[in-house]
Image 1: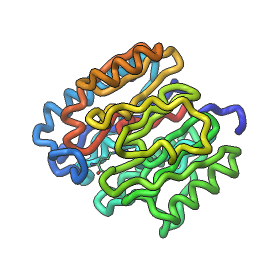
Image 2: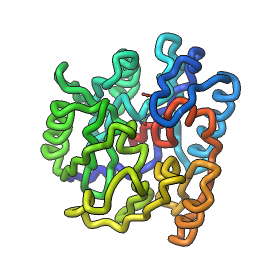
Image 3: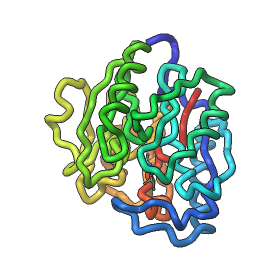
Length: 265
Ligand code: CIR
């Protein structure tokens, strides 16, 4: 695996909300964003929460032509110190990755995907020495094969999940807040889908499935979305120090916590 740990959290990249955020895609659980100003404020609070955990952030300007540009997780996957630049799975999002590639190439080697391969970074969850990969409406077979090869070449294992068409991405319903631990949502994935992976799995109840998307730090802090008391309780009981961020406006565009950031160092 090399000496690079994808869990380190010292530098990251975010992108400001597009002035056209009200046109962002919302086909899963979101109702469509209506208030750009309020979304910008919410995004600023999110950025503060990352910075409070010691992250040094590169903040890219929002793109007028890409209403979904704040969801930088989808544009690249950091694998063993290299950045795989994604061919995003939705046509309206193509073109978001170029500026992300430019920014990341100042720090990492970049890997380009063949044209027929489609992959949203939101379908990839880093877990210990694994990359968990979702085959979804945004990530096709060629995309899965390509990223699996990149992971294997760099000494990581992979594990592929079929994501139900009612769910946007793997990261929408599964995250790893700390080594050895996965948080996932009842009713979206089934326990048997994890057979073969050694993990302590914290299942959040179906009605809190949005809260399965978490961001954990080495200091034991975990950021979750505000408004999900059962998940907050489960994680506190497990020993995490839980901070919550109001994600209401971001959720309107089918976005979750991890979607808004890339950690690259
Ligand atoms: C989209 O549909 O692509 C955006 N509205 C939401 C992307 C959220 N990203 C993620 O789950 N990684």
